[in-house]
Each structure stands twice: as structure tokens, then as C-alpha cells.
Length: 340
Ligand SMILES: [Zn+2]
Image (cartoon, helix red, strand yellow):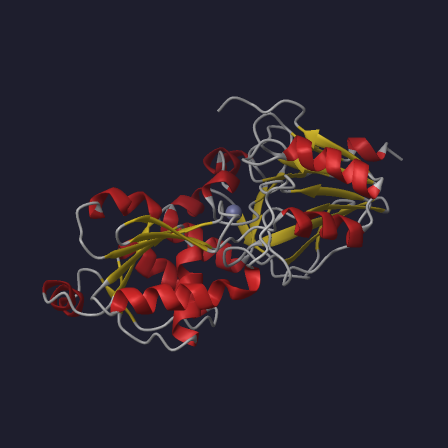
């Protein structure tokens, strides 16, 4: 049997290697199976290359639907894409690959590879408490908030805070919310469930992503395409609505006098911070905080942990804290953060 530490790794190009055949979230020349754990850009690195060169590209059906929108319908047709549902094992030669649910953007998966009796798991991005903990021998995990100061004491009240601030803004007219795909839909869901039933206005991409969320049974409210007559009428009359836009569109709205809310995971001191006269940042995250990361390791009971030192975060600090606090062998991989 190969040494445990040889059964998993993270390359300097961001590929998470599990067992003998799988490379997750970036391309690796030697691996026939590419897994896409979810549709965020830092997990679809060099996907074009994998589509051309890998025998199979694996992802959940929802991730496939989201990528068809974010990358264009023809993009995935370049390769042999196979969809895999949660907890349905896929056998490849002498290994078994299984996806498990991860609470993050729609379609997110944890990946378990069973290789000659060893269980190797990659959590990818996840959030607690809804993500199931999968026991394994080697754990590869995200380290976004892997530093002790990245702990959010106010997670219970965050939904109330969002509803209050949006209600306050709507009193004066439209409210604009900026965030990333997935998080915008989550805010829509929170507002709709809490009775904020004004029209939601969304641009093309956000509109298409919303449609995918609805296809998978998520109730995110009544939304209108920003180019629809209804949306134009609401905007011209400065009536009550909530606009949901990608973070990158913020600049386009810099002169608007309406309420603006940014949704960010990088807020730890308070749930809501005012940054301008009518501008706020709300601390809503779709990643585990430091305590959650440690709890996952504690419950998962691996023999070895690799923390992702390729993507943004605190891989080295997290590995050190796992060693210190839990007495489990842990290292950051790759050892040096690559320059991108
Ligand atoms: Zn992500």
C-alpha cells in the first residue's frame, strides 16, 4: 500500500489530487478524471484543457447547469462531461468516487475517493452546520477563514440584520444589493422567506442563475429581468424594488443615490457596517469560519489533513492550529503559495 501522504496533494496549479486518477478544481496532465466541485471561478481553473484532455469531467447536474450559463452553452460540449448525483458512487478502475452535499453555491460537492481501503476526502468550499461531516483517513480542506480571528460570533442574527436594513432602504425607494453568484440568490431566498415581497430586478446572468436555482426547487421570489418593461417602469419611477447585481457591477452604480448593500464574507467584527451615507456591508458568508473548520476536522477524525494553500485563505495557520489544538498531522499544500 502506498504511504497515506502520497494519496493526496495540491499542485502549484491548484489541482487537488485524490487517489491515483482524480484531479479536482484545476487541470493536471497526468490525471484522466477531472472533478469540478462547484461553479466558482477559482474551482474551474483550466477547465478548457481538462475538457480537451481528460477522459471524463465529473460534476453535479446543478454545477453543469450553472457552468452552461457562466461559460456559455457550447463550452462544456468540448469534453466528455458526466454528471454525478450526491451519494451515487462512480467506479473508475480500482477506485470509487462519491460526491456528498456541501452547503455553498448550488451544486457544490465534497469528493470522497476510496482507494485500496483508504478514504480520501476533499471538502472544497463549504459552510456549517448544513454540510455533512464525512469520516476519512486523509482530509483535504479549504482554508479561506483558517485564522483564529476569522470567527463570526453573530451568525444567528444575520438574517434579521439583512431584512432590517433592506426594509429601512425600501422606505426611501429602491435598494441595490451586490454580491457573488450563489450569495445573491441566498439573499433573495432570505428576503422572500421573511416576507420582503417587493419585485426583485436582476440583470441577464443573475437572471439565468436564478432560473437554475428555481429548477432545483429553491424559492427565491418574483424576479424580473432588468431589461423587461416592468423593471424599466419601476426604475424610472424610483419605486420600491430590490436590485441584485454581481459585485463587479458596483462601479456602474457609484452615482446612484439609492440604498446600496454589499454582501461579504470578510466581515468579523459586526454583522452590518456602514461605509457611506446610504451604503452598507453585510457579513454573510458561504464559507465555514475558523471554529467550524476545526470542528469539521475534530468530527472527521482523519490521520492527515492537507489545507488548501493555493486558493485565498490561511492554509499555514490552519494547519498549525490543527496540529496544536487537535494533535492531528496537518500541512499546507502546496508548501509555498504560488504567485498568480
Ligand atoms: Zn466557492
